[in-house]
Picture (cartoon, rainbow, N blue to C red):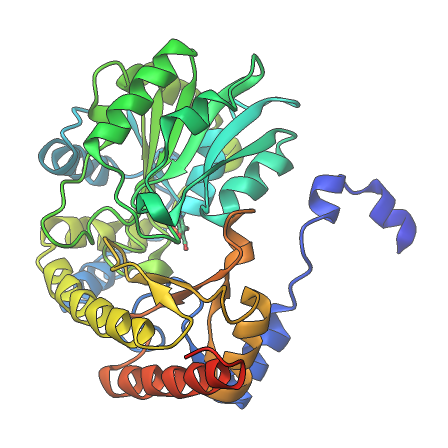
Length: 398
Ligand SMILES: Cc1ncc(COP(=O)(O)O)c(C=O)c1O
C-alpha cells in the first residue's frame, strides 16, 4: 500500500481523505439536516415538468447516441442567445461555447490548458475549494488574495498588486462568490480588468450562481468588459441557477482563440455530456420562468437566516447578496471545526467549515439555506439558535 502511495503525485496524496459512504450513512442515521452541500431543495423533487418531459421525449426518440464532444448544437445556440441577453456577451455557438458534464469538470477544462508547473494563480479567498485544489493538482501555486468582511468581501486591487510576480499567470475567481455570496461590483471588476491587462494575465471566472442575485444588484460579466474577451474564460452551469445538479450540464465560454484548445481537447478530457440531459437543459433554458420562483424562496430564506444568526450572541453575518448560501462568522465562539461539530451533535445540522474555502475562510461556517422544506427549515433555524445561544452563554458571551 505504502509503495503505491509513493507512486501517486503528492498533489493527489495530499487531498484530504473523504469517506463519503460513511458520511452519508451517518447523516441519514442520525437525522442530521443537510445544509452543507450546494444542492438546492435536496432531497426534495424540484424538476419542472417541461424539463422532465423534454428528457422523456429525447429518450423515447432513442436519444442514446453521443452528441459531438463540444455539445449539442441547438443547446449551444440557445446558450448564445442567453449570453447576449443576460451577460452582454456575443459568442459564436460553433466556435466559442462548449458544453461540459458539470462545471467542476468545466473548471478543470478551462484552467488546465494554461497552467504549467510553478505558475502562480491569484485567488480571492475565501473561495470555492476546487479553485485551490485544481491549481495544486496541476502543479501551480494558488496565491490567496484576502476578501475582508469589513469591505463586504469585495477584493482590494492593492492586495492583488502586492501579490503579483513574474510567475503570476491567472486570476481565478467565483462571481457571485461561493461561500461569501458577494457580487463583485462593476468598479472592482473594472479595476481588475485594468490590472489583468497591465500584467498580461488570464482570467478564469466561475459564474454558476449568476442568476440568483438579490436587491436589484447589478451583475457584471467580466468577459463583457473592454479588453477581457480575449483573455477570459467564463464557466457556467445549470446546477445552481436552475437546480439541475443531477443533469450534469454546464458550459464554458471564451473567444475562439482560447476555445480552439478546449474544443481540441474535449474528446480526450470530456468525452461528451449526457445527450438526454442536454435535451432537458435546452428546455429549461427556453422556458426558465421557474428560476424566478426559486429565487423568491431563496430571498425569503436568506432574510429569515440573516435575522436568526444576527440575534445569536457572538455570531454575525452579512445579508447574502446572491446564491442560496449564507456565510456566518462564528469566530467569537470557537473554530469552524468546533462549532460545526457542536451543531452536528446538538442541533442535528451539517454546515461546512470555513477552512474549506481557503486560508481566510476560518472563523466562519457556510450554510445552504435552500436544502430543506419550509417547515424543516424553520425548525432547524430554531435548533441552531438554541444550541449556539446556549453555547455563547456558557462562554459568558451575551
Ligand atoms: C462555485 C461553484 N462552482 C462550480 C460548482 C460545480 O457545480 P456543477 O459541477 O454541478 O456544475 C459548484 C458546486 O458546488 C460551486 O459551488
